[in-house]
Length: 218
Ligand code: MLT
Image 1 (tube, rainbow, N blue to C red):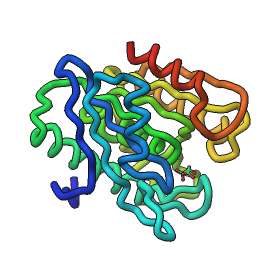
Image 2 (cartoon, helix red, strand yellow; image 1 turned 90 degrees about the vertical axis):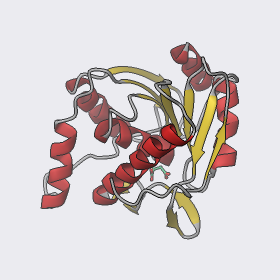
Image 3 (cartoon, protein in one colour; image 1 turned 180 degrees about the horizontal axis):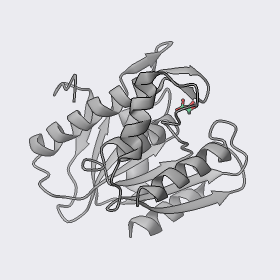
Image 4 (cartoon, rainbow, N blue to C red; image 1 turned 30 degrees about the vertical axis):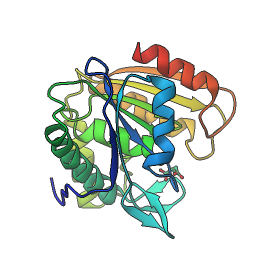
């Protein structure tokens, strides 16, 4: 894991020691303060760890570089996921989280980095709630050698201990269902337990999504 800095901008709020740690990952243009509000709606007793995405795009926070909307720089996704996994190892030690269960909760670009973490670092992030996420590491047929190596890492992932909740809108142009379906196939092929909730509408966090997330956490 590269570029691990303990001074990574983040927020940590200690909750009940019996409750999970919610790793809150904001969407494009968000930050750690803004996304941490969602944690209270999911589990007010949880501890909250909310880092800030460090890939700037026109001055707004993101988790990784994209070539255009929905077309990701796979190499950057993998490198940033590696960095974030390193930060999480540091944070688990620094905040003395021991073996407390960690659940990554991401929205949009934050959901996509959460899913990349789940695919590449299941030993660090084994549970994910993804609001409006899609496949973050879909390696195309004409991929470069580096991208194919990342695809091979995904294909070698051991996800038998992983559980993922995918919350998507039927008509979300930013997280197309074809990409979500290909993600479901990859996750299940690697042994993850996947629950998928599709609702009417597009990109966002609907009340029914929050209710499904609360039920899944319980
Ligand atoms: C992404 O770039 O991760 C997705 O397209 C969602 C977003 O625009 O943030």
